[in-house]
Length: 171
Image: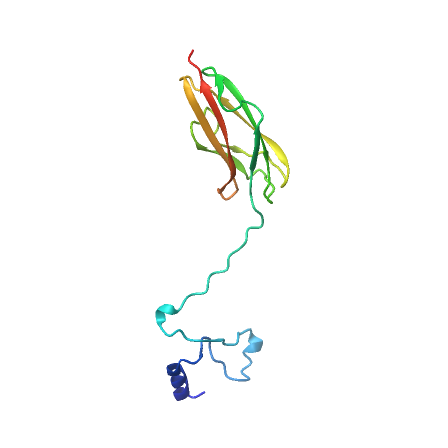
């Protein structure tokens, strides 16, 4: 294709090359080069769009389904400073198996003397497990609600949050 015909085809709105031209029989194909591709040129430069970058699908999906409180039902009246053994029944209803890299983190409310982050009980996908946290009721009377959620190894929160919801009575 001559230089003049290349310029004329660009002005006509016909397809124009977007790759590099290689002379015929140059051996470029055997060297791993890719043949040029042709696309229609946009009529205005602002209409040109970049191809989206490929996305990598996660190998599995993390999820936690809250099933029930096993101890310390919501609204339980407790005494100041009382030790509370809170347990929840949950299901790993995602496709990822929870291992030592998964944790449970405080997402709202008072810490109630529990570590802000702790290991999530290891569980295979599709199994039910009990989660347990030991809390201490505050000394001040009043209602308290502490919220926790599972976290994957990359730090992403997932699944249903779980709570302890208590009322500390006046001494």
